[in-house]
Length: 402
Image (tube, rainbow, N blue to C red; front, top):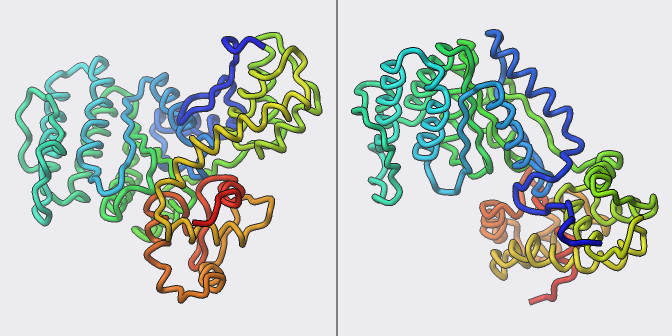
């Protein structure tokens, strides 16, 4: 098969040639956009799931939908130990710039930009001043406003900033959407501020929504911050594709290149990928490159599988494994031994990990907490942990003991 014509695209956040199995989420977001446009109250949205299920791809697709409805949009990727103030400032600046050409009063835009500049430049008086390289240089040619979004308290300031941004969107008859990826990396203080701002906006019916994406324990983080967050957001769990959607993700792009699959080849690809979108693309790409002709057969899948697995071992699994310390790797390998051979996103009791290692649970807390902070495991329920990466336990079983 011609590798130049290979349609599959395994990549971080890279949209696959066929976005299969996400019609429900796309339709639900279209309803949100239409309801907000008609002045109906609507909740912000949280997408949760393991790594490799396509959360970032879906987030980008939803943003494109919002843009097509003439909304102002901005997107950020949260990072550990970074305040939301700087990235939110940049994202809201982008959103208002998208709305500005449709606004009849330039002075109204300048008024908001003054508030945005004040928000961006304000330091929290309770914290040490940020380094110069960490400060956002807004490039806004208006003076910062005084007495609005500049208190230094992120919760007060974010509420005021969002309220003013929503007011600008109301003027032009559309809305503003802030998209936040890797939401689990937002600090507890900023999570609380984000919830408070969304709560305020939901009470007034203001046309601004937040669309977040993160690991499965994001709902627990939000709930720990504000008890009302369980009712504040619409949660959508993004999971692996069912068999029909996984087959479509493979066959639709191939048909556009006049290539077909035998049924047993699709059986083999689903078994290998488990229906996880990133793996579907990785195995599909390797199989295409190895197949001599159409139709692609199960034998072609078997020949190509080792190459796909080798690439996943380096780029998808290995890069994460290398970030862990020896103690953290020992913790993860023990988790892997406690999971069934055909592992899915099952949880492991932390007490069982400690028992297997013949250690006290408290002595393992530093390793566990570090793994959670690195995004390698998560704690969905008290006393349990699970891998954030599908099939990671299977990979760990192949690694030599250090």
